[in-house]
Image (cartoon, rainbow, N blue to C red; front, side, top):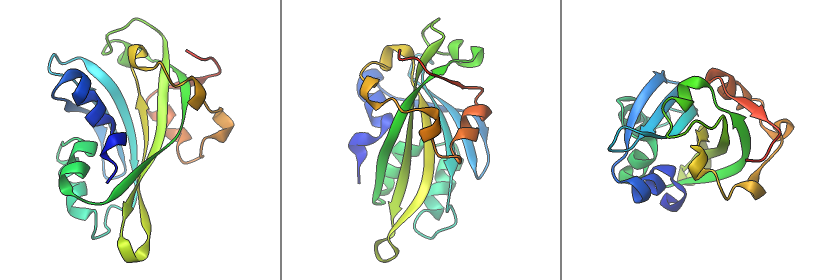
Length: 172
């Protein structure tokens, strides 16, 4: 397991218990606010799920879709997984995100990653591709991870549109 890279774990270390406020969800797409105990959004997650019917992840996926936190549920399930960061992009925040973040800033960083599930004999299984939109106060330190729009997988780009996020060519 790779729980050190789980964003939920980092948020809980900073703010205490984190809850999940689902904005949109189906078996393939999930958009959520990760909120602290004061109901402040600390991250907006935009997730595309893959291979959800595989026996290794099927039950855990159902638990996640029932409203549980993705990272925390993976960690508690003891399924072996690996989360890898692809990079980060600067985004213009839409009003619906600004209104929920503790900021009035218009730009922040969105971190792009994926999670593979270890199926042992069959090798890694792609489970999610994730965009984690950070509030501006958490976006420092990503300057060296910034990638260009043309370097983003075509399967991830529509996730930005779903959340009304515009990729900008500035560094925040």
